[in-house]
Length: 128
Ligand code: THU
Image 1 (tube, rainbow, N blue to C red):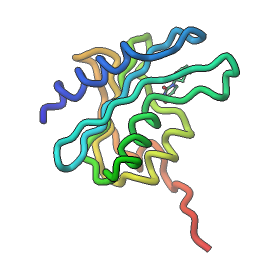
Image 2 (cartoon, helix red, strand yellow; image 1 turned 45 degrees about the horizontal axis):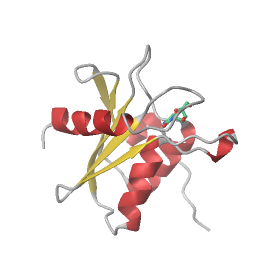
Image 3 (cartoon, rainbow, N blue to C red; image 1 turned 135 degrees about the vertical axis):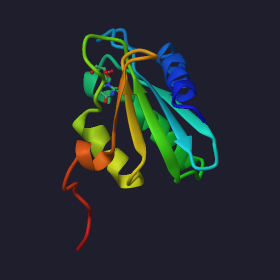
Image 4 (cartoon, helix red, strand yellow; image 1 turned 60 degrees about the vertical axis):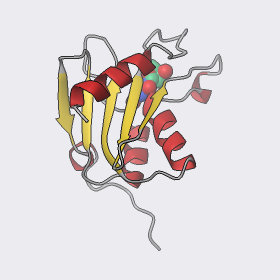
């Protein structure tokens, strides 16, 4: 799977964003080790905190379907800045992935690639 193809899938997902409040359309595309793609888009709500980020929509869909081995995640949003994931999404991503490529794209050709330990060093893990 080419990075470009995964970026396209995230871009297509961003077109299905429900974001009447921020007007910021985010799409995510999550590639599993066996080549499946789960997508997500941000879904907002009149009660703002009830909304959900695109990355978590994709990740939760994959987990709910029994997929938990991932290769890459694209987060796509067109705007002035690269769409770096919010802190909550970084924590959720860290729960399910270790060294996958996280591709942060603001167009089909403009992206940066990070891994989760760069985005969230010393992440919280639940151990007692
Ligand atoms: N958003 C995401 O979808 N992913 C992030 O990592 C950051 C923020 C969405 C949430 C909200 O719908 C909009 O972007 C503006 O914050």
